[in-house]
Image 1 (cartoon, one colour):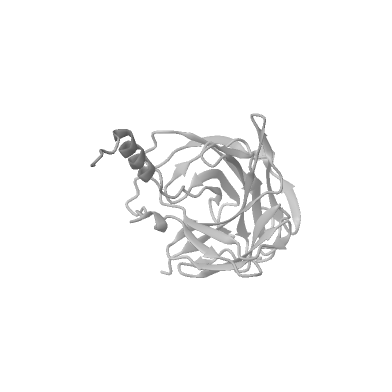
Image 2: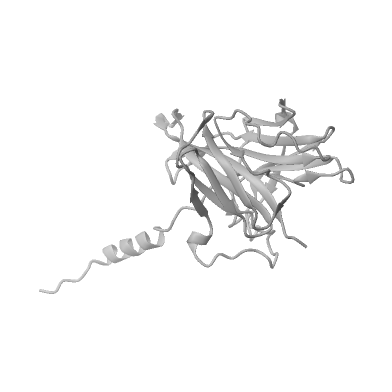
Length: 268
């Protein structure tokens, strides 16, 4: 006997198909106004601190970070007090989300590694908290020294390629550390920071797998990726913390990410 499929079953199946796509990758972002400061450049660098989906230009609301600083000549400086609240949005600019900015005066030559530990972000869709320990390096006044030094964050990416002065298609290599030790076979997500809204050069991915690139590190936590376009690239290695955070009376897992940003330019 032929039976009809209940209409609610058809609707449920359709909804499942619509929601079965991959979740967009979250990235902590530290984007300086310039990756290199020369003798002829202004000596103040502006840093934008965001929590975003870089290629899709979707923002998440970001509370004031717990930690924000810079390491130069092996010395760390607390910059938390310099953060200023700002508002921004996605491609259509219909919503405004909180992010943060800071100005830092360059006074001496060398490499300046900026770093941030955000306030944990509750992600209800994944039933967990997210904490992305994020870094970026700015080179100043011709002295190339310090870019490969660890900051000492709970998890971080140590660049094995000098992370500035990179041409498009250069290979970036890094090592993923967790509590100071390499993470064997870490999975690293990579995204391009898309152009400003309305810019005709914005990247339009033809399918979901093009949004976030994925590479596997080797047994020593070392990975490499060749960046095919000029601009800012984010590298993110995720792990589960060995601690939890209480949410409405329940202990919730915490996703900790080691995130590093590098910039490329076209050869002209």
